[in-house]
Image (cartoon, rainbow, N blue to C red; front, side, top):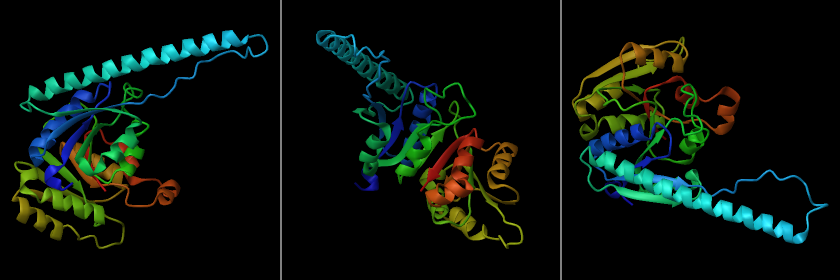
Length: 288
């Protein structure tokens, strides 16, 4: 599927961030002029009942009765999850309709979240997700258990929502000269995406290294998008320096490459992407 036929997909659940996911997905769909799909998965995993070991005393017909009871219970839970999923999508449909998108696509998918998204990867132009699911809803300093695996599994831009929607006016590009950060420059240089935005192009320099590397990407952005570009070279730990700059300049959205190293490298030395996912509290657009 070519890019003109791809969609902005809003990945919804029962968490408090689902409304923000809807709103950011609407914003993104309008920015890049792609259709919007509202997406929810139902994972029919079997809940294991805690049953005492009665193998020495339970008769065969008693065991069969217990199995039937558990099967009926799982069937009822499955029906409730399907009903809840349909209602969730209908509520989201009404929310985006109130913002002017009348006919979003709806998808209720059965199976694991990551497997389902990998299946639809070629259809996705940008995926919008919440930083936390229902399990971590009340833990603002944490991220969802599946978020990092999801980002590693998909080679599509992923917009992570952290809080109630704030229409982006200023963006910050975390630039390090890597291949993924070059993709960020290509995105931001698109006037369709960046119209009306102020762009901060930021690099965290290493000590003793000539890091005058922002001139060329700044020129590309200005030439392509004709927007204001503010360049800044910072020092210190990258995630801390970037988040401090974000707060100081009231940045609405950070755009950066994701997971440019191997899993082994990240395991041994720590992942910059993972640190940023934990450190920031503003929307984060990640490109692989």
